[in-house]
Image 1 (cartoon, rainbow, N blue to C red):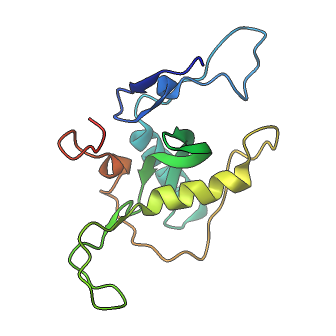
Image 2 (cartoon, rainbow, N blue to C red):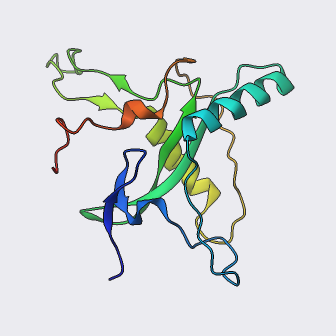
Amino acid sequence: MGVLIVEHKLGFIHANAGIDRSNIDQEKDIVLLLPKDPDLSAKKLSESLSKHFKKNISVIITDTMGRPFRNGIVGFTIGSHNIECLIDERGNKDLYGNTLKFTQIAIADELAAASSLLMGQAAQKKPVVLISGYKFMQSDTANAKTLIRSEEEDLFR
């Protein structure tokens, strides 16, 4: 099948460790790797765009991954800056008054998946998506690392 399930040094566990051969010229037989520090890259982009546009801009850097029990790929967040990535609803009540025990909303991943639909995965040539109208909490200390489960909480180890 040609797929390895591995843990990338950034903490992502997925097929082929973020080594990608798609959407790059293959005549030189090269691969595309993930950034060394995607959160830092997102911070630099956020600060530069914020300064240029004189607005408080948040940035999410995305990639795609396959899921172990479903067909297809989905977008997910590998780096972010100035956006709360995870909203913890544990302890809050649902619409029937039940206490939520496990619900944490991966806001950045939800937005990454939506933007991935607009960017496309083949020849669409849309590397950037502007998301507007979504109300979220800006945080210059939050980053995508909050989305990675600790080894103790990992459901598959």
